[in-house]
Amino acid sequence: MSAAGTKTFAAVDLGASSGRVMTGRVGPDTLHLTEAHRFPNRPVHLPEGLRWDILGLYGGVVDGLRAAGPVDSVGIDSWAVDYGLLAADGSLLGNPVHYRDRRTEGVPEQVWATVPPDVLYRATGIQYAPFNTLYQLVAAQGTPQLAAARNLLLIPDLIAYWLTGERGTELTNASTTQLIDPRTGDWNRALADRLGIDLALFAPLRRPGDPAGTLLPEVRERTGLSGPVPVTAVGSHDTASAVAAVPAGRGERFAYLCTGTWSLAGLELDAPVTTGASGAANFTNELGIDGTVRFLRNIMGLWLLQECMRAWELTDVTPLLAEAARIPALRYVVDAAAPEFLAPGDMPGRIAAACRATGGPVPHSPGEITRCVLDSLALAHRRAIREAQRL
Image (cartoon, rainbow, N blue to C red):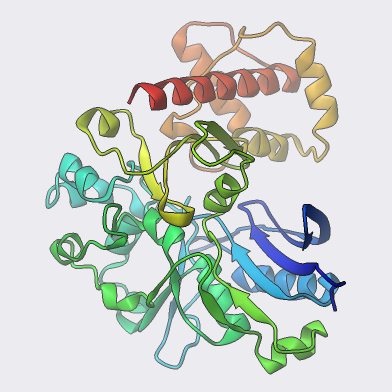
């Protein structure tokens, strides 16, 4: 049990390259964070495409809850847009498709033939990305798995379902599907109908702070936790939780940079911005905590460096940063948002090719390429914050 005046929470945080379970002890004017367990997130290349190892992630969550010890509540966040499909009996229909899978190639153009991109943006406020849930569902139309599905759960909601047996769709993550009206905070049913997307697949919407069930007896047995242990809906899109944690006072104007495999840079607003200029600049309006809007741009992020390190078979970034620091700034620069950097495979070669295509100097050593990545990301972040203020 927690000491008098304090409570202990388990925060399950699933990123695109690793997951972790943190414990937070909260008391008057006190927050103490401890990493209880960290585990890798290694997507799997199957003959049918790129898939998440969702069972491995769930095992890591259970191990993390066991390591966390007694807690007063559990919350779960993850990356956005991806989902699992459930059969009528609640069983999972295959491993969730990874957003970097190629199945959505050509699908946006197919969608735009029915709903032009400017109409789509005004309806949802969500920036174009080829892996948005909307495009994934259109790509899945006609497949046996979607035909057999009776429920669709976004990744954090799927983990919560396995922990509690209860189904729901948390709103901040649902807003990234490109199927939510950011003005009403509800599904855009007219849009879904035009594209043949069955919104009945989604479980009822939840908002941050809503109850999401209690740990099942068999889960408590595996984790050693004594019940009941409630699970609470949080800002289950990890960026929603990150922005909620910005130490800004009420009414204070601030920008944020949220950096991981993806980077997100933008502002917190009271209402969405869905102007033509905002759509042309590819800014998104994702719903946040307490009715706020995260007006931001997605930037390719540290994925570029992660993929380079995988190609170089390196695991320690420290020597790379030291080598990069000795190289003059801005000698090598690429467009960090370029679509050719989205898929996995030979990232150093693609970065060098992008530099070569602009006629500028070409990086060759790992230090030069690392400097190129970091300088390019710095410029992309600065550009995003400036454009967010202008828009």
